[in-house]
Image (tube, rainbow, N blue to C red; front, side, top):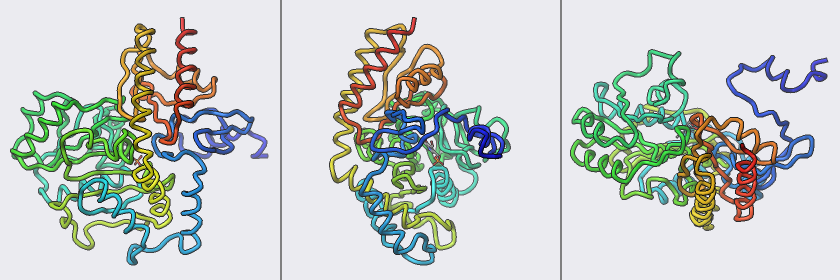
Length: 394
Ligand SMILES: Cc1ncc(COP(=O)(O)O)c(C=O)c1O
């Protein structure tokens, strides 16, 4: 009886309705494509919101998972597991920082960082975050959020958090003091509409950090692991954060997040101060090692830098041609936003009808997050379809 009703109706009946589901029944994925049960093929320029860096069905990731599950799927953090140590070594190598704590998600890695900051700086000092910032949905990370719509039903949130305008140098200068414990920054805001921190803004943060000695926390959950054409987005600037938070792509599709600290903060946590049953799961770390090898060591990050520039220049040509239908093109590497003069939900529907999956964020920003393995042909296909949609839009 149950099976005779549609899966969408069953989902609505049985799951809390926190997600707006896309109306396709996915059967499987392969490379940069997702396939639906009715046989349609979709170019996935959404890639699980920046999780599926190597696309679907990557053989090396699958093999690493298979090898690991035959040893053990889970091992308590009372024991050392080798993939965890090896992945931490790579994260330290490519970030230039010192040590790692593994969690299961972005929001959990943010929570870990908040506890570390509070322990080091004490309960009174302020934490600064920015308008439109997104750091996750648990209470601590939600307290950092610059998006009122996510916070409005959930007070009381954490105290001593100050929100300033993103890229607003004046406000920064006025509000950062000796009472500042930390600044949380997405060098490129993802959820907030692919907004890129200006060089001047980052320089000012650095200058103020030298003066007031707070911690700079880079949230690289979306922008990290090669997505912007460098291992981490902050590497496009002349600055080194004190703490770096990663998740999404780092687990090869399995739940994994990490907090990376520099030398100064690497012994703030003592045994028992923080922990997680599943954090740093060996299968997720084994999968993550393959991602890091492909992205950092097999030059995929270079592909992203080159093709990201090409993609943006093609989008800018469309911007020139359709100056009344596109407000702005921005981003770095394969983290690109196209701002439209109106909400972009219907545009996303049109893309889907034409076989492309893409996301809309902050109401009117088309968020393009292709898998890092995407080719020039994939990009050209996207551009042709976008051009077609724009020409049809009267
Ligand atoms: C910049 C940023 N930080 C934190 C998070 C939260 O990560 P998660 O959904 O894994 O908890 C996200 C998720 O989109 C994000 O984009």
